[in-house]
Length: 144
Figure 1: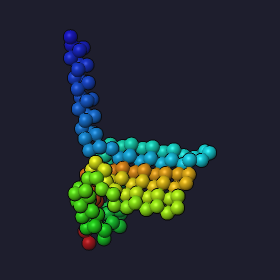
Figure 2 (figure 1 turned 180 degrees about the vertical axis):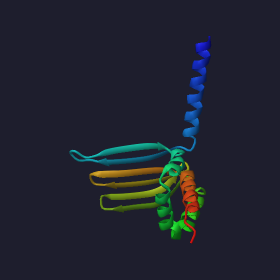
Figure 3 (figure 1 turned 90 degrees about the horizontal axis):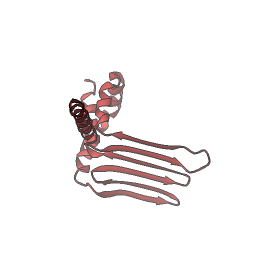
Figure 4 (figure 1 turned 135 degrees about the vertical axis):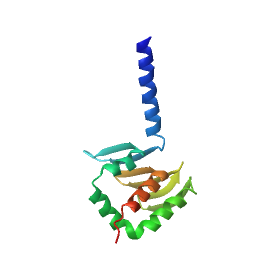
């Protein structure tokens, strides 16, 4: 009976940790090259891991990135806020010959899809993650 309670406790802990980790969704990056020897990279990361990872990145690198982004921070902050108002929208859909670029939102996530002959790139990021990263970078802008 004691072993069953311990197993239940461990299973519950793993279930709650999984739910907590994936509550904000996934960041998905898929890159495919459709040729002999082409690369196929598929990375799925819990969105909740990104703000945590920023805390462990070397502070000087975060400050450097924040400093370079400083002129654009009001635009980034406003963009992230406005994207919430359009949970399912198409912003860019450009076709040039066999090249195709689409940028939009779907289910509260920013989606960027680029398809060219022989390769494709698909990126999906929860809008809440964009807001979290923008506010974290804004806090790390060095004082003048």
